[in-house]
Length: 161
Image (cartoon, rainbow, N blue to C red; front, side):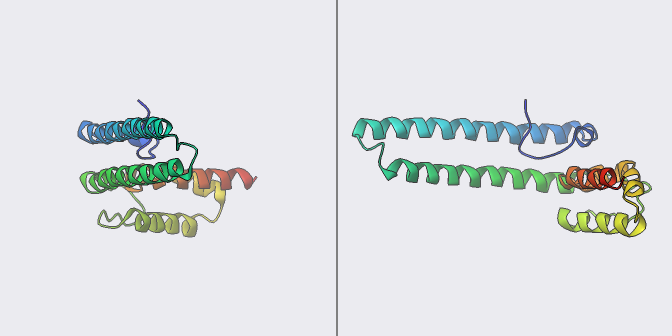
């Protein structure tokens, strides 16, 4: 099964508990069900409009836009619920994290704290990336933001020479 309801790295998934993985799987299955339902609703509407002889009118585009909007809202609600669960259900020992670990912060605030620490402590991009890649706490603490910060630091290290 492809997991696209959230953006976690394989390393992050590997550190989750069975219960957390089950929650992610359930959210993904719900999203997949909604996607299938959307496709069926579009087929039904298309057939109805073809039968009525008005398929080529702007009505089809309006119906699709409404169905897509409803779908996106429902998927976002599922995703938000899952992220809320993961944010508060996973509080591992902060271990030897060199920055303050506060799970009551939003993911954006956590990202700002971790990014601020690494950029102030390691002005050299290669050293920054090497240190960040070794940070086991960040993988869970940053949630979906871990992958993007990892890629940013990897790219900076690569361009640094």
